[in-house]
Amino acid sequence: MTLSLWPLVGIAIVVIGFAIRAHPLAVVIAAAFGSGLGAGLSIPEVIAAMGKAFHQNRYVSVPWLTLPVIGLLERAGLQEQASALISRTRAATASRILLIYLGLRQITAALGLTQIAGHAQTVRPLLAPMVEAASERDNPAITEPERNDVKAMAAATDNVGIFFGEDIFLAIASILLIKGFLESANIIVQPLELSVWAIPTAIAAFAVHGTRLWRMGRAK
Image (tube, rainbow, N blue to C red; front, side):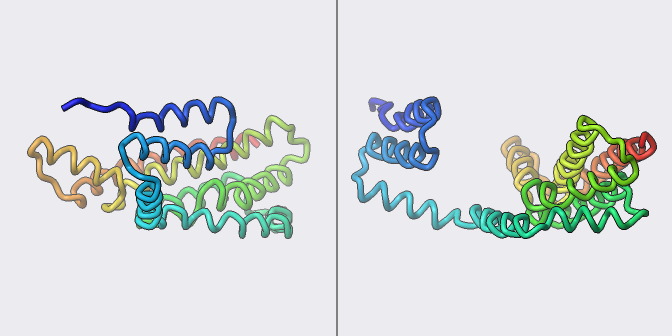
């Protein structure tokens, strides 16, 4: 049987489309039609396949529905209100705020609640303005590079929390991937056995990054 390479035309369309900076959605749709027609499907069959894929994976798009809401809140002054609140709270230092957020991020990720926080949902509109306001309150002479360092630490804290917390959740994709790989080598393990081994790593990550946050606070 001769192997046809026509279904791969979609890859070429994606490469060319992004190279000429075409609209991403138009590029993806064109690539889908290219691969579908190359595979011998009719136009109605390609449309039906796209609809089926969208229906089966519609949950992937749910988090994006929160972005317009966050944008409206920012326009209404969410960042300014968060900054003002922290400016009036002397006990809320930048390192303490980030340390608390790190713990909450790891705990919620370990429970599988990975979408309730993140860079777009929490770091940019809330966390970064809060730690920036705390740093500015404690150091009125803060420079622009120091502001950027504080905001970068806020983003890094979210990354550490989610990365080392989510593997404790036994139904996360990484755990299932490891389980599937081990089973292919006739090594049978349960997801819970794998997730338990992620707990010491998460604790170590909290200790290491918590030390970095403590040192950041001491340097102010």
